[in-house]
Image (cartoon, rainbow over all chains, first blue to last red; front, top):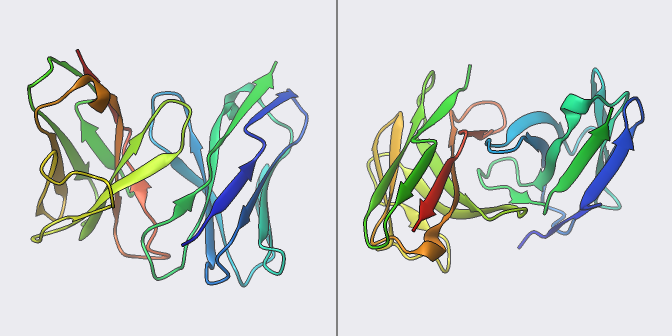
Length: 112
Length: 116
């Protein structure tokens, strides 16, 4: 089955700095990679996703990159703000499947 | 669009009682809903996949008689934790998919269950 590794487990940055979270996956059949933000006491919310036929996708301050050959994908947040503080999960799945495999999560702390 | 609600958001019950958690898709129909369990500072663990009008498919290690799932309509799935014990205390999250775009799942806000 699919295995998704996520690093780091905790990331602490100053407001305005950039944050990068990295994930690797094992199943070359995976072709859809969503990222979720989970605030304390709430369910995960999709913030950005990328398909395997795209190498990079950007939405305002967040971007995701995918290296299909190396089976790596990363989340980049620029100009971080305190409200970006949350747990971020990467995931990987086959597009036609409903079930993603989640990474273990990264707790991002943005200090004002 | 694509809003999923859960009720209740928090529940505290005594050991041995049963607790029902509702998951509703508010603005779309979901033929498939999912139930996850999340322990503190850990990732989401899929418990079961719920299809409208049919029996749920449980993941390995999840007791079907302990966690009863009913997907009665295209907008409602329920999870009943039967004879709850303190080790069942956890954060339960449902998700639903409208089957559009990339079969994306939309997550509910979660239910915090505490069993005393």
